[in-house]
Length: 174
Image (tube, rainbow, N blue to C red):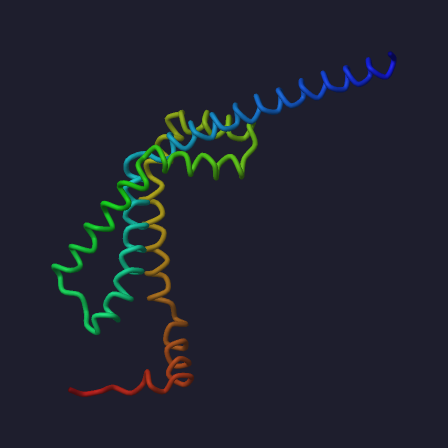
C-alpha cells in the first residue's frame, strides 16, 4: 500500500510538471509568434521575399542558361521571375513566414527574453528601430564600401592582386 501511494504521488508530480512545461512552451511559442508579427512588417517581408526570389532566380537561371547554351532573353528572365514569384507566393504566405521566424526566435530566446523583446518592439523606439533597420543597414553598407574605395591601402591591394594574378594586369584591346 505504501509503494502505491509513492507511485501515485510520483505520477501526479510528473503530470503537473509536464503540464506546466507544456504551458510554458505554449506561452513561449505565443510570445515568439507575436515577436515575429512585430518584426516582420510589410517592408521587412518584402525585402525577405525579394532576397529569396533573387537567390532562387539565380539558382535556376544558371543551369537553365547552361542547358540552353546561351544567356536568357529579357522575356525569359521575366517569365522565370513570374514562375518563381508564384511559387514563393504559394509556398511562403505571410503566416508561414511568421511561423518560421517564430520557431527561430523560440530557439534563440527563452520566454522572459521574448517577453522583453515584445515589450520593446511595441514601444515607439522599438517600432522606430524596426522601421529604420533596413535603412541603417544600407547606409552602413554604403559607408563601408566608400571607406574601402578610398582606403590608402587600396593601391597596395590592387598591386598585390596584379602580382598574384598577372592576368588582371593584362589589358585587352578590341
